Length: 546
Image (cartoon, rainbow, N blue to C red; front, side, top):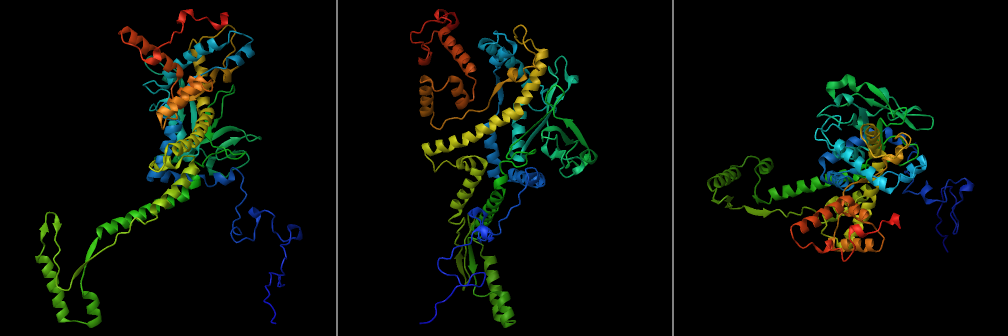
């Protein structure tokens, strides 16, 4: 019997059945984790560097952001995704509902006059003053005097989505105040994140990272901001001049407001917007779409052609000068010049002897184009925290349950992004404005109330309102909202905020005005206005009097 074939291992020795891989302890370098295996052909060349939080981003920030901006400018998928995220998280009217922490104020001051009744009265007064500042037609709240506060918030959030950073300076400009002019000296100036950089383009150091000055614990204490954008050729000198701006005043009033998505401990800059993980795939999809479109246009233009038995240049090079063939080609040319018969705007083809018409079989777009595009868009949607339908704007392949499930998952991400932006960017702006408003307005305050600086967080606490979640099936979802409120599982405030983006007190006030208008005109109020035998307002006993 012949000797069996032997398989030799890397050491030149025969591999025997049952011979297992040597353990890592034997010095083989093989890990018990597949994720750490350096010999598997699928991962052998995959050895990414272990970057620090700032080093992995700050060195490449400009390149990443420029590519993302190019996609948002020129690609409909990218532009639409950013717009839908903005519309769902911030909307057109992003505003605070001030709800002071009266329990904390009562504890700080020892004054029981800080109660829910006072909190409602105080919140209404602050709300009115905020609207005068935020929505002034003169746009005095904006350093450029162009946008309202809601519009400034939307633009700042757009910078965070695309560039990774939302950056602003709270200016103090009393020179703008006067009769018919600004009522407050607090002014918000948005800063393009490109201007935040290390002075004189130095590499990151212990003291500053990506333009952020830090202390020994890594806390931001100031910011280095160019006086002009590097792309402003007419301001080259200012573009190479940096201004150091402290984070806050000595008493804690914010000067620079900086918000970004924190992904690792010790991170000091953004730069990785929502499109960063999918830039490569989205760019490839753009190229694929353009290629398919070009091919389809070519197929449409060259729908048919006339085939001749002779090609003049090919025949001449093969057979030399031939009077018969030359005469034949001249006759073909004269024939087509003289017989241009038109039927309306269409020319009727008349063939010369020996010619025939061939058609082009248009196979564009490719049969798998739609499936491939959908797969890429699902990948893109997952990376951006949206549903695939929101990215593609195609709802033809989903039913109510799947659409609602997808939107609810996307809503969690959108609500989280709104809340983080509200706490990190919008709330410091509101607190800085309220500090000035405390001095200029006559807000209702009990005796011996603590100063604003003593209880900044308690006085300025607010719930930020954006657009509502909306409905897919209004009947089903409104019925669910009613059941939730009747069972005590939800409140009118929550339902108005989540579904309509409205303040419940404004809704109640409007309903009261509508009921009164019905009765003044002698009309029967709608069914929801029927109190159902409930006692009148004057006979309802105050709970505090029981």
